[in-house]
Amino acid sequence: MFKYVNPILLLIISNVFMTFAWYGHLRHKQSALWVVIVVSWLIAFLEYCFQVPANRFGHEVYNVVQLKTIQEVITLIIFSIFSVLYLKEQFRWNYLVGFIFIVLAVFFIFKKW
Image (tube, rainbow, N blue to C red):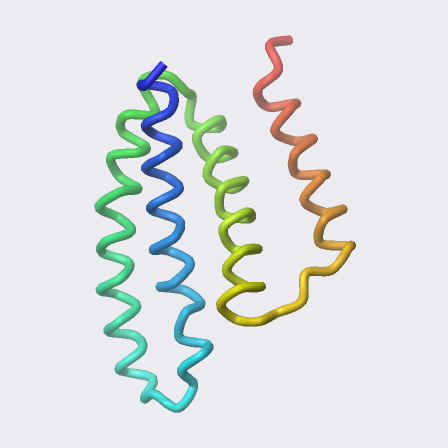
């Protein structure tokens, strides 16, 4: 059981760091670009410290397409929460519809045909 869950937990942690590295600076537009680049790189390093093991361990129980699909779904969930809570963006109904289609993609990727 843990071998299936641990990669997902590591991907969740990784995606939190990734989201802050990629989008966190949008709340700090007054900061110099070079500063946010360096800070983003430092955050991205932490992201890789979780993402690489997640994929390494995950590949023992998931194939690469499944791993990427899991990662994308996690990214959308974390990004949605981040954009609403941290960036104060509005979550719209059409975003939800688009995410539902992505969940359908997950069904087709993981279904044993």
